[in-house]
Length: 639
Image (tube, rainbow, N blue to C red):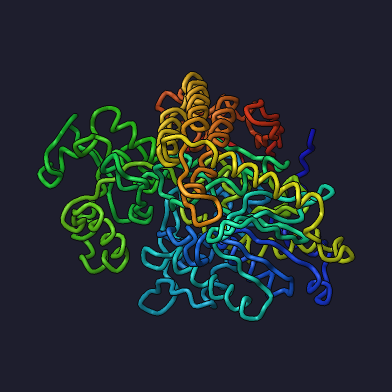
């Protein structure tokens, strides 16, 4: 059985990271040139890590399945990126950002990791500004900030409604600089299909060239996964269609523990499902709740046009239930509140599965141009998708699958339970607990890649300077490639009638219905049974046209869907054992009299890290106790 050692350093919370950095071993510039590092994924986490490691002098190989790193899903982050700069002089601080994140995650994250993320956040903003990211500025030219959910200060830096895209372009510019210098070699259109372990250490990966279909072996002294989350397990989600769990899941099957898989965020402001033919949903930024007011009619089943419903007949339910935070409560709270109103019969639209997000008061108070300057591209996107002009009538929104707080277990060095395998950004579990606060994703991804991993990975690589180049003709590489080839041929030989996407859609509905916003023991168990039944049908009736030695997107989808069956089962397993409600994990059996999440700190203040034991075999759970020495653990309230 594996033993968990989080390697949290001793000492005062505010000094842990600086003292720990001073104790880490270094690799000399001459020796860095001898060491190779694989970085899988080139979103904000991967691009920042690859460029920072290349700048340090390591030989970096960067991989993405897109045709360019610019297409990573980080572009979809709209609202902003947090940092504790206190530019508004509203009493913000590193500690307050740390506390808000711990509280927002419902006290299910490590104190040390969260404080470090808050600490490096200021460096991240300085770095992106130096790279030329066009953050919004006030009239005097200083960087502007706005507020986000779950906080009472303005610490979110933004670039209109396209912050993720602008930050990614900044990271991409630093990455391409290193590519031009020769320290980073870019491998686009490559899909990682297995991790190679040599004598207990991560030494490489097996990839499939998505253009030629050829399998390739790549070796390195360390492997970094920056492959994002698994929110597309719901099929309909705010994530890009290519987002998947496969790289992390392949590492999990090779021995990397998977932590808190049931902690998956539901975002409250997505454009609702419009028809049965959709393959994804579109996010409307949380930043809109700064100026938009959320409401439903006080009358059940009200089908009147929203502009015909008078003010006195509107229920601004978030302002009513949570007066201290109003429309800017955390995402899990806002999502459950919207679902409760819709389930009770007060929802908007023909389906009754949406609520209104109204900007009339803000436009009246500040003028249309002020709102347009802040959110113009978001309003255009909404009108293009729905045909409704949100300047003239309210948006309709509804919760959707979004971000995964769960992921590969990592220690303070961001290393998994496999020596030499690191996980950064959304692919690890470390910073957000049971619910991520808005604008903390870009903060964590960038902090991990630019300012944390480049320090911690050197301590591991200090022992590798005498290793020499890792040959790819070793038996572990041959066996891994053979295993991938056999897996692909198994898919190609099924010869059924149904597409991978059709199975994914049904799988996603099972997960949404039984392991989505609200859960109970009976439903979770039923979900596992339905997944098993659907998986059996998948392996009998899947059809993949074409062959595997060419561009074959159906094969790509099938490989990912097969992994989602196992991911979904582990999510249900994790949710079943966690007999409490916390953050985005809401068990119907465990709620307060007012319908809020009811934690059980005595029995469940731990990280659940799961060990893979085989297909459909019951996984082993390892517990990492969470200790709170610098915050008082108490019931989370936003009222």
